[in-house]
Image 1 (cartoon, rainbow, N blue to C red):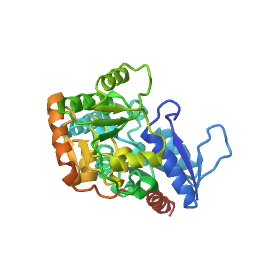
Image 2 (cartoon, helix red, strand yellow):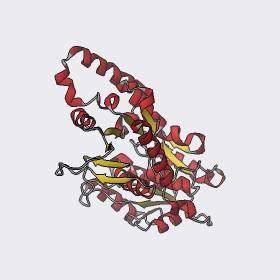
Image 3 (cartoon, rainbow, N blue to C red):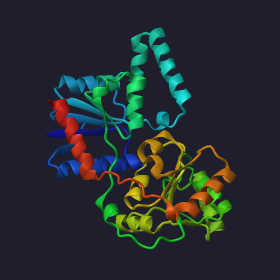
Image 4 (cartoon, helix red, strand yellow):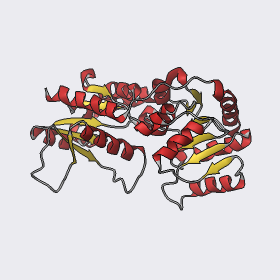
Length: 333
């Protein structure tokens, strides 16, 4: 079996979870005996059994791939849509239906709404996003599969240690992740917060404001940039009092899964992705709350963390690879 991977966002321009997802999925599939290659747009002799696109593949390219005998898997992240309130999602569907009735097909086709129902299979990271693919785009239920992100073995193997005083937040320092707002609440609540990550651009004003806050309160905000050593990162999760991620938009946080693999209590932004994955095994905080309300939630979580239940065990990357192989085999049959 040969699978061609494609993605329209260059890794060199936007580091983050999507890159890790693609790289780890490829590595795990290869260990299971699947041949995986990047789609080579310059090579007219390249062939494959399956084209897997990470994102929303333009429908005309999807049809070209199918005309060449390939099955197409669309692995999209509905991050923004999945983070909206229910009434906005219903309004969005109503507007889509109205536009389809009012405008000719050639004006709608660039939006690629028909990508999902035309694909041989669509994969979603959570049950919530799988629901949205069916609900918004009228995708047949049998073509939609939930295949979450995985976690590297190093996080499962990390031994239990005495937990320290620090809450840990592993995220890119950007407004969407609300790292600055979380740190401000930690200072107000007097709850030590350890942040691992970096801005997309060192000149970014948001990142600079966060760094200034960390320097002004080193006893409460610990910041050292990203931690590339995976063993050290696993040890950091194991030693943390709890994990905090209060982002405004998320699909399925890799860092939350890593913390869960290390049995670290979770405080997450109150969004459907989080509740659909962790349910009652995590604590939640409103993503629109001000500093005082967030500080109260942080303090409550900090005090309760030692007695909170462990999150459920996430999947490993080999388990994710085997789930994808089942999808490939189904559509190839």
